[in-house]
Image 1 (tube, rainbow, N blue to C red):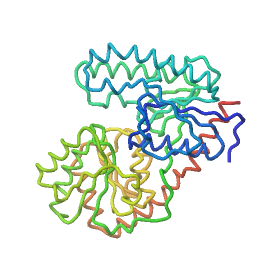
Image 2: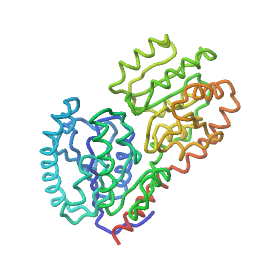
Image 3: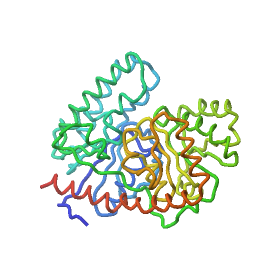
Image 4: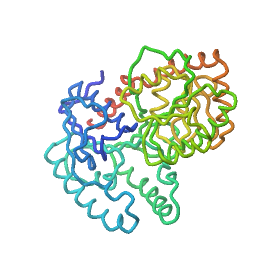
Length: 382
């Protein structure tokens, strides 16, 4: 194990941990690993509101919520956000500065949240590290129109300015590295597998699994429309989508309009998602954009072949088309359906790709990924 000079105080800054999202799972897993290895870990949030973290945290990890509550402005309109955001930013900066001076951390790691514009300016003794769990183009891929599209384009330009201010800027994929330009502080460290399992899915259940928040990013409407084509040849297969979000009613209405309610289930998030992967035979993802999708990492760790849009960023770093799954051009619903049907109708192909997926998952073991983080900590402290 990489040795880090003492003391080893690390702070993570992000919005919250109450959601069942991929980023929340990744942060929890990293913090737990570091806590188990003797680091003093504090997680500082802005919007937790005394809600319990969705994923279990090591008992030695300290938590502080600043009570900024940026999410209270969601759905309130542009004028409200423009009038309240500066005040929240000033309070956020002041409170965070006070906690950093009190905690005397060695490193403070931002998850590219509301602190990204000012964390690097704060006058404490810590090294500031920034990590992003989406791609370079995350803001312009939100699908906003009108004034919001202009604002997001401007904020995307600001992102490039801010990332240069940090001691290290960590992205998840080599693909995303190429989109940021020649930054001297940029490092690539992928997400790790969420769990370890020696078990493999037998791949004999007629179930395709998809996991993710029910929102614009995940584009589950494409997966539902692809399933309408799949059902013509494989009416005895099921699609199980695990997640929650603002598009739940929209997606259920779409399922009903295609008369697919017997074939597609919208399932609530579950803590033991591993069991669901092990009871499925194929994983599917139709996202508009990603960082390094946990849904694919988790699926391949359980030996599932995968079918995914080749979106920015992440699927290309996980899937080698024809080896452990298939990449499909974004938006090509008929091609996506054909790849699913190819795996459904060929047991030998499904088993072959599933075994290769399990083997390739070893690239993303927790120990391998965390060694990269420990190496980064060592380099920063020298």
